[in-house]
Amino acid sequence: MHRSTRPTAQQGARTVSMADVAAAAGVSQQTVSRVVNHQTNVREETRRRVEEAMRALDFRPNFAGRSLRGGSYRAIGLSMFDVTRAGNTVTLNGIVSAAREHGYAVTMIEQGVDSSFSLGAVSRRMAELPIDGLIINMNRMAEDFEEFTPLAGLRTVLLTMYAHPRCTTVDSDQYGCSKLVVDYLVAHGHRSIRFIAGPKASMAARFREAGWRDALLAHRLEPAEVLQGDWTADAGYEAGVKIAEERSATAVYAANDQMAYGAMIALRDRGLRVPEDISIVGIDDSLEGTVPHNMLTTVRFNLRERGRIIFNLSVGIEGDAGAYTSIRLPGELIERGSVAFCQ
Image 1 (tube, helix red, strand yellow):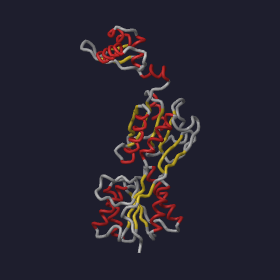
Image 2 (cartoon, one colour):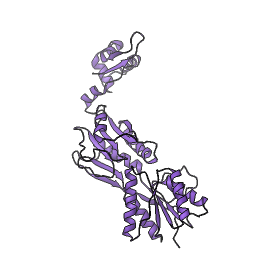
Image 3 (tube, helix red, strand yellow):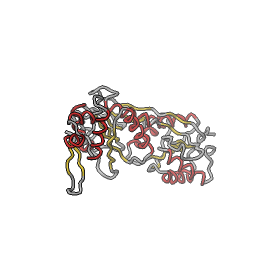
Image 4 (cartoon, one colour):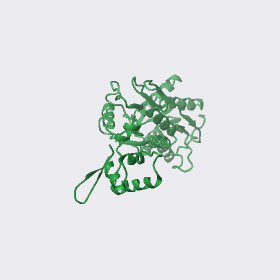
C-alpha cells in the first residue's frame, strides 16, 4: 500500500514499493511498515538501514495506506480567498499553528476572486485529497450556500457570519463591531458619523455597514451616504478628500484600518486636525508594527484565536459530531488618539 514515484535515467518514472525498500535494506516488508509508522519495536540499527534505503529510493509512504491503519490522514483541507489580506493572513497563522500543535498538516487551495464560488465544488475537489476535515473561508457568498450538504465523513466548518443548517460556522462579529464603534462615538458627542465601506462583494463589509446603519438608527440618527471603498489606503484617501470638502461630519468610521489611515492622511492634507477637528475609527487593528506612532483607535479581533477554534472544530477536538452551531467572536475596542469629544 505504500508507493511513490521515482524518476530514473532509463524511463520517465517507475513505482517504488515497500518491497523495493525491504529488498534494499535486507529486511522484511513488515519491518519497513513498522519504520514507516514510527513503531518502537525495531532495533535502531535496522531503523537506520531502512531509512537510508527509503532516502536512496526516494520512497514516500502512501497516505491512503496510513489512513487505513490509523483512521486518520493527520491533515486538514483549507480553502481561502486572497491570503495577502491582513485578516486572512492572521487567521491562516492561527490555523497552521493549531495544526502544528496537534501534529496535522494543512492542504490549502486559494479561490480566485473573479471565478464563481461553490461550496459543493470546493468540497468535492478537496475530498480527492488526503484530509480529515475541511475549512472553507467564505469571504463572499457561495452560489449554493442554502442547499449545500457536507460530504459524508468530511467534517466541514465554514468561516462566515451566516448561520448554516448543516455546518458549524465561525466568524468574528462583523456586525457587532460596528455597534461598538458607533456607541463609542455617540458617547463622545458625535452625531454625524460618515462610513467608508469595503467592497460590495465582501460579506464582512456588508455586515459592518449594516451594523453601522442599525446602530445609528438605534440612536435616532440618520445615516449619511455610504462612501464606497475597496479595503485599500488609497480608497480611504479618496473618501477622506470628499469628507474634507463637505465639512459636515464630525467623525469617520472606516470598515478597516487601511482605509481609516488613508482617510486620516487626506484630512490632514486638507488642513483638518485629527482628532481635534474630526475623529476617526477603524477596524482590525492591523497597523501596529507597520505604521510608526500608530494613533488610530480601532476594534481588534483575535484572529489567531479564531483560526485555532476553526481548526479544532474541523478535526473534532471541539464540538460534537452532528451538532451544528454558529460562533461569533466579539471584538475589543482599542483606544488610542484618533477620537476626541465633539464640541
